Image 1 (cartoon, protein in one colour):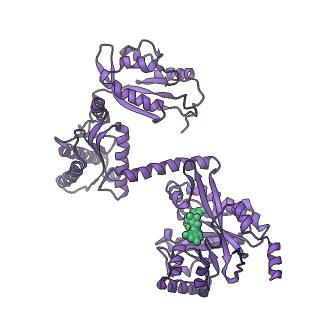
Image 2: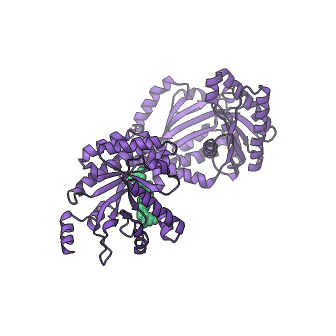
Image 3: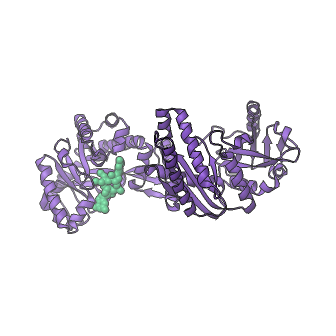
Length: 578
Ligand code: C2E
Ligand code: MG
Ligand code: MG
């Protein structure tokens, strides 16, 4: 993330901080790690014995006002920030005031983005944590400030922690507030607070975080099993509370939990894990507990990393995205010459690839779900349409009737004005609409066959072709097929391969589907042809088109042009020679 402050001199940042210091009760600071200088609001000197408002040799000097017990945790934190392992700072610890008494502070900040690893600057604020900040008024439970203090004091002593953090969140509190009013919502929050206090008694400490979140934390080495039991007890207590309220309102809680043994992680790291588990519990349908799973979390972090990198690619004019093309051949007119070169490639399917920094070239299965989840499929989908249509127009100058097929994701169609996007791509590329095909899968449209029908009709009105992709996998609604304005049924490669692999049942189904498609006026493309023998097994069923590794693997446009495109002139010469 950029704050637009890159390139500012430390002195200029200090100037900004100096002005802002007049507008806040906190103390703002600038810590320049490369120069080891620390600049803090002059007001801080009223309470703490800073010799100057700007410290030189700051890492060392700062320790003079840090409470001795907390110096180790601050040093660890600073090391992480200086080495670039952390970019956000959020630590509760103690400074010593001018009377020699420890004062709890919450120090938060961010490293300014900078390409130069030798030039890290932390900018942030120091707020004094008062005793009022440590108790939640509604539930009487300790707050997040207190949680940080409690965790910090154990961590500082041992440089590690053992126990668990169980986080619970009231399901649908927003809806309860809306339906019954905020006062009722507050009653529920307060009841859940009571329940947490009760189930924690003697084993853990209960805290109330923002809005409707609670934490039960144990730092005396209790196991995950104890936490799981605690969640079960909590649900029982909540059932009792509902009974006490005369079942006027039914409410549930979801839970996420992480257990740890001699773990040197800081609180924020553990909270991120517990938040991930709680998020999973919510996604699993709420009213359940999810225990932290490291494998899923690693996958989640990798996805987040991908997400960020995809965003960078999009911002960078889609750098890293590339369309590969796989040949589609005319099955009614197969010319296989001795070196297997097929001379009747009538089109191709555009298949997206993404080169991810640090991971190499990725297949769509690895990133399309991320694009769909984040909505980025809309902009990438537009780019795919434009690129494929322009490629088609270019190749049509060599091979007049050559077709390019483009896959459309259900989410892309749902989240964007897809008709307009297709029209725009047609305008930009000036492609002949008869030469482009949009591939749709039925799976997204379960129960919404009308939607799919309307979409295929709109595309047909634009003059472009529509193919039904992945036919034979998962969901297929035969009844709707007759109403769809589709040109071709594409039989999925997994399905085709089962048939060529000897599955008699699948062969029969393929035979009948092909017959049915023809009777409905549609063509059939069989995907996944890997061997010459596959052609021999399937040709009798009368397919119209073939696609598969046997005819060519997906490749970039340069290779495709070289290996598969046959300019019309060459084709005529070949036909004459035959
Ligand atoms: P699809 O549309 O059914 O594409 C065919 C997939 O089958 C491609 O995988 C292709 O490489 C693979 N394939 C082709 N012939 C053979 C064969 O003989 N044997 C085997 N084992 N596989 C074969 P790919 O490129 O990994 O794409 C996977 C899926 O990702 C596609 O399935 C499509 O649903 C989706 N996809 C690809 N490109 C795009 C795109 O640009 N936009 C959208 N929305 N989805 C795309
Ligand atoms: Mg496809
Ligand atoms: Mg397919």
